[in-house]
Image 1 (tube, rainbow, N blue to C red):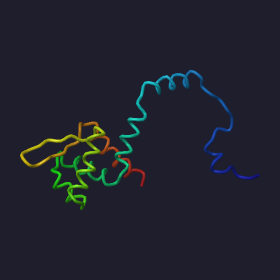
Image 2 (image 1 turned 30 degrees about the horizontal axis):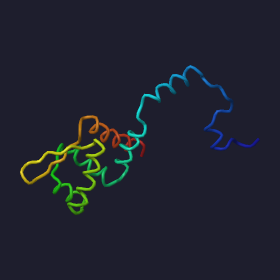
Image 3 (image 1 turned 30 degrees about the vertical axis):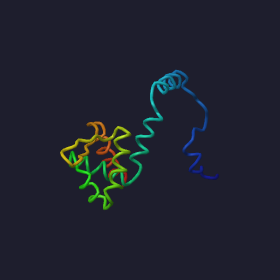
Length: 124
């Protein structure tokens, strides 16, 4: 007898749909913003922006000058990435004289960054 393929081992061998569960979840799906949430993950999917978010998470707040140095880039490149993080609601700014400081928008963003790295260490 031929062993089951990996693909067939990952699929149901018979169809048994739990209609109430499916209907409940389909209704729940309509109330959520999947496009906006996907955009949030897309913003963090860039390794440079993820490094920036991680660095800000570690320090709480960083100047654009420090961020550019951390990611070994120009201030213009760092500012470009920071603007996108701000536009996506992941970061916020604070000006102090001629300096601009970035922090993560709220504790949820910080938790998201922290959990992503904790999870990545677990799957290794």
